Length: 171
Image (cartoon, rainbow, N blue to C red; front, side, top):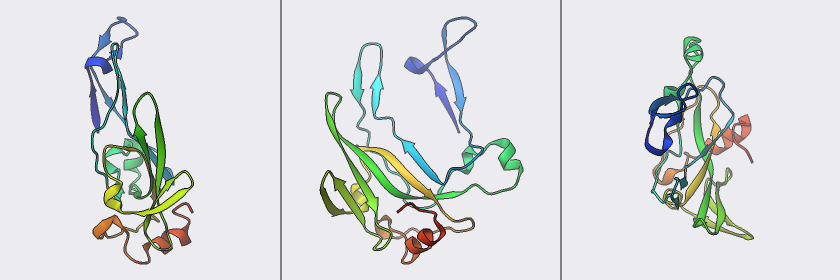
């Protein structure tokens, strides 16, 4: 996938020393077992700083990043791995101060839990998607496995056990 860099994000050309509109392309050659995606939540311009509160949605299962595979890796014929969400980190507050909380999937009961300092409480997958989501943590599925999405964003019964047995998901 390609991204156009313009406005405040223009690239500084080393030759002409001017900011130029350009296209950036990200490709992945070696896939990590744990994929950490950081959501851009803070914006800095020459005159302003803001916290971005755009509500986002993301897949809980079967995140396929095949569009980002490097040309040499694609030529190998090896399929790109598929990922499942196992945790999120949220930022509550603004630029002047805030608080971080975590949401994690328990592999035994396949329920989501909110970790807020010393308090742990049950939460729903619907609560994970929104304007406070800051970091997403995905684990790689075992090769050749694709999990069915179920209501509530949970894996089907036994899917957590398979990931745990294969070492595909962190504790």
